Structures are given as structure tokens and as C-alpha cells.
Amino acid sequence: MDAVSLLQIGSAFLLNAGFAWLVGSWFARYWIGANGTRRDSFEPALRKLDLLASGLSAVGSATALLAATAVMGGVGLREACPMFWMMVSSTDYGHAGSIATLAMTILFCIRWMGSAGRSSDIAVALTLTTFAVTRASMGHAGEEGFWTIALAAEAVHFSAIGLWTGAVLVSAWFALSEMRIAAFEIGAADRYLDLMSQAAMVAVIGIVVTGTFSAWHRVGTSNHLFHTSYGMTLLVKVSLVLMAIALGGYNKFFGLPFASRSHAGVRLVRVALRIESILLLGALFAAAILTSQQPPAAI
Image (cartoon, one colour):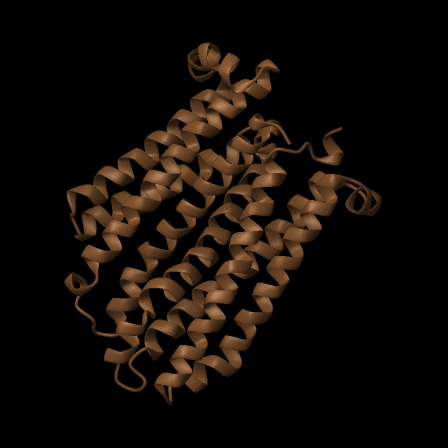
């Protein structure tokens, strides 16, 4: 794998992971507040993590444009640098990539200013929506045009996996930290975990429906699924998602009831969420690899 492919995959993973965290943190602010926790008790720490995530997504989006320039020109990264501005300013892909980068830059500025009111929440939600739709248009689904079912499915799929992955990441590594669990009263996390679980379930349904449509649309036949690198990568992604769904199901039916009765139950839920987060990050990485490959149905 050459430097261009590595940059293409790495930048796609960075922006996808950053987007997922930002979606999860947006919802988590309301879920944590539903437990009666004051927002100013967690907002400063969560805002710093949002700054990191939006910065990584902005960098990932910009470097993805450089990788795309090299791919379009059939040249290496060094030779692509002089061609970068022409690609950004004169192609639809470049325009979309610029909007996506700008969206994450704006979000970074919103979090940097530190506003935590309803207006900033609305601004962040609109920025994330713009990023999701624009990013979807830059993939294989956007090749058929902007107002298409394929693009709508891809935008919903991208947003849904961002919600699920983000909710799991924020819950596993922030909301259910050891310090917070120790401060909880028994059952204090019930409302948060219930809202998080409901959102994850809705996201999974969206992922399954839109993912099935997109896979059929791009792979075409079962032969392509098992005998092409695109198909095999897709199978790896689906396997990771299925394992994550199994863990989510365990938490839904066994972990959450146990968590309502003891701190040990909350810690067990956190362990399952952390494993689930690793599986979902693996799925995001597989998705990043898919962006660098041509779908069999398009060949």
C-alpha cells in the first residue's frame, strides 16, 4: 500500500471518528443532564475533547482532499501539492471537501468560544448535519448526483453510525468514568443508560436498513461479495458491526438491569461498552478502507 492510499484511509478514519465523537457528545449533554447533573460540572472537560475531535476531523478532511488530488492526478503526494488548489477550486469533489473542512473548523470555533446555551447547540447540530450530508456526497453514493436515494441512504447511514459509535465512545470513556461512577448513587445512571440505549437501537436500525441498501447497490452479486477485495472488506465491517450489536444486546437486556442495582453493574456495562467501542472503531477503519476502493458494481 503506497503513501497516497495510507493517507486516504488514515484521513477518512480520522474524520469519521471525530465526527462520531462530536455526535455522541452532543447527545450526551442532554442524557447526562437527564440525571439531574448540572451542565457546568462536565461541560469544560467535554468541550476540550470536542476541540480535539473537531480538530482531528478538520485535519482529516483537509488531508483527504490532498489524497484525492493525488488519486485524480495519478501522482504522488509531493507532486499533488501544486495541483491541490486547482482541484479544490475547480471540481465538485473539491468544493464539497472544502465545505466539510469549513464545517469542522466552524464547530471547533464554537467549542473554543465555550458557549453552552441552546443557540450553540443548534449551531453545532446544523454544522454536523452539513458535514454528514456533504461527506456522503463525496463518496460513491454521490457519483449519481445530489438528489438521489443512494445519497440519502448514505447520509443517513453515515449519521447513524456516527450516533451509535459516538454514544458508545462518550459513554465508555467519559460519562461512565471511574470518578463519576464512584460519585453515583445506586440507580443514578439509569436514565442516562436508558436514553443512550434507545438512541443506539434507533441508530442500529438505520444502519441495517441503509447499509443493506448500499451494499446491494454497490456490490451487485454474492460473487462480488466473496471474490473481490471490496466485498471482503465489507464482510469484515459487517462482522465487526454484528459483534458490536451482540454486545449492545447484552447490555440492553442484562447489563442495564444489573447496573440499576449496583456500582459493580455499572462498571460491567462500562467494560462491555469499551469493547463495543473498539469493535465500532474497527468498523470505521474498514469503512475508511472501502472509500479507497472501487465498488464491484461500478466496474
